Length: 160
Length: 56
Image (cartoon, rainbow over all chains, first blue to last red; front, side, top):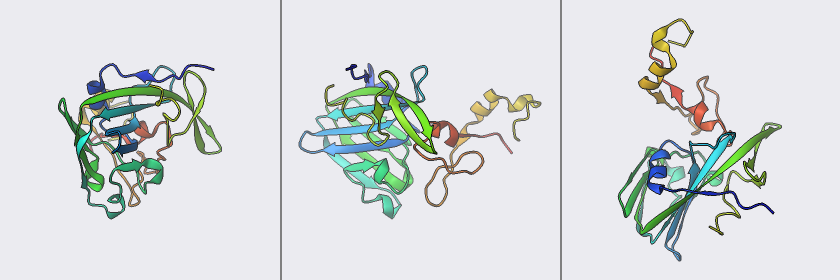
């Protein structure tokens, strides 16, 4: 079996600066583990890859605050959001962060997410895309393993 | 002005300097330069939904 092909992000701060204008695939706050996992499109692709994803895991999360946006249908998304369950796609409009605090601005429709954290780590996964009968299917660019757009790090992130 | 290859002021670089915009329809779908909805599952989603500002 091939090795999982996620690539650790050497400088998560730089990755945070690059995900502005990226599509949010999902985010989830885990109260028990005090972690916040953000998965988004990543603009820097490996040569030959058609799409790349980034996962940023914040640990030691506290003071989580969700400021709702103007659109009622997006207000129910509080501690969790997933593109597949959402009535409309959401973009990262801006990121403000210091060493221990981050604010994710997800547009006036969705609102913002802010919290404090102790540490952030990140991973990138590159994918090949194939269109079959109008539907897009993704495979890991290195191993060829199929991956779901809704959960691009399923099965590989736990081991990191 | 649309790019026609004859106007040096409408080169790729000037368009990048001018910036881009994104637009959405009422349902929240992001649209490409021709007004067609782009599915978030499209690998070119980012490229297609960023529309270079080309002036008027």
